[in-house]
Image (tube, rainbow, N blue to C red; front, top):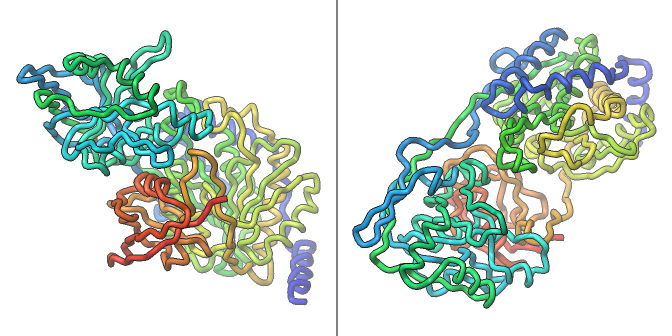
Length: 597
């Protein structure tokens, strides 16, 4: 009965109250062209191009007569870590019984960008592929003393892993960060990587500094050297790199050993984190009350590519990000243009939000909910658009439908304006985009998305592939939803959605199900939870949003990579003792891990 009354009022308000026009596909596409143009440099954090995009958005909002809603006019500045740079004092000196040989940086050796900085002189141990894979009955560290030593390991993983897993690709044990965490957890002070066997015609190349993903500091010194360097050490003891690697792959068993005590390495790693000042761009259309609806999208992208590029051979080339997410950003601008003449006419205001730092981990939206520029308790809903420009066969994905009590009814009404869309709904509000930051604050969210494609996170994500007419139709639907939310007699109530366990498969998953949502903002040590999924093992153990995980079983947790590695090494049904910091105080909990779908 109550729902029918609300619906009747909603329909009446839409029919007789304020209304908005239709989105202009040409204007929309022109904004995408501008935002993805070469001078925007892929809108990467720390680039002049991102600054140009910021000024463009600020200028557009100002031109529409919208009120500034940042901490500095239209802007809300904050600082992000963009990567790392090599400083001057990096050394790799080989000492063979008093005969010292310095290696040349970027020619013979290179540190990884997430290596710890520092100095070390220590003996050397060869640890095969550096893998401890209980699921395959294989451990390169079994019976090997590596405490306070330097471990040399091969790239990739033993061939038997692929045979036993049945996978065509590599497992997580091949990843450099997994090898680094494993070495550190076994007590090693440094890890030295070598390429090992090369394909016909393949050069023995060093990794590009910054080209491999990892945390800001892995907690261990981490470098790569050329094969020839290690092969000379092996020949001194009657072995060869090719023979050792072949022995491991042929037998399926480790072949680890300590080098003679006369061999010692002196290492110096000098790395400095790089930071950038970036901005959320915020504009407000006031309503008759203090309540408001958010329409948002992130405007940053990958710049010239980084470890998140899905075209690693093209890192250094501009990744224009036309669909990701100039398409959503242009959508916010177009809706701002349509709503701007309605200043003071709507019952609720509309806050137009252009986020930065999304590609680095939802940092812009996390910054805003942490330090909101409007009262957070007056926000009735957040509508997020991320990659809406490549609609195919009229198919659109809308997430978060279950988080608001009136969302399904509102969406069904809005779809009458654009009836040709084939909409796939999902109830939950968690995914890898900015609306997730708002779910953690119990704000109802809707997420509009046109789907992944082959150009995602590549230089080929260009404006000419945008389906502007269909995107404009979707903006009409989003605008209708926003208008209904702004005019409805009552705001939607937030609903906690108990979602199915996340799906994972093969070696790419995160092991058993735990149920926390990480906060990607910087924490000095540990992993902060932005939220905990209702009904999850973490929730059942009493863990809460804001807790900082610092211990998982017997493993210290310094960053998200540590947590991922520890979880992957656990078993379904295992009860893990964890330690979190809550308001600075340590709290212990027992978490029973569950099966993923």
